[in-house]
Image (spheres, rainbow, N blue to C red):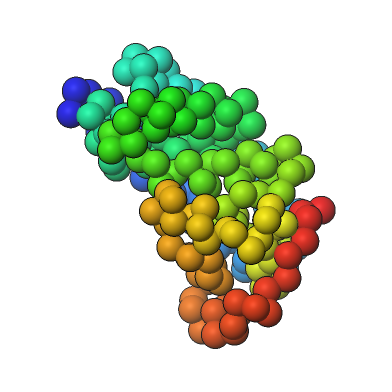
Length: 194
């Protein structure tokens, strides 16, 4: 690994990010009045932005998020930090991952490309390609935003080493509060996000 200090910092940024997002998600699930979350959401967005800006500065230093530069864990951290920030950041990071992939798939954390691609599609109001993003409203069960050419989604997923489509497991909720996990996948509802 060429940049161990930067890799360590990136994984630390991700750890901070995950702690804050989980706490916010749990508070959101428990809150009856969502207006009380406004200040917390504002603080979260500010912290997400600051972490993403630091991640982008590190990317400028190392030039690309390749495994040989920063390792798998830090490359994964870069992808997740980009997903949590803005459309601008996501496009920039996805382009770097795509260039790494085109150059050498084995030196790329390519498993992140489908989720970044799908989130970008959703933000641009287009059907996702890999079906990696599920959304939910309040405490209701999740729905799958529209997937382009759904009948071939698992082939596209397999090309990037991700498992076939299945119901999502929410990390912020106990499994016994997620009844959809026991339902067959053919009962899923696909629709465009509102």
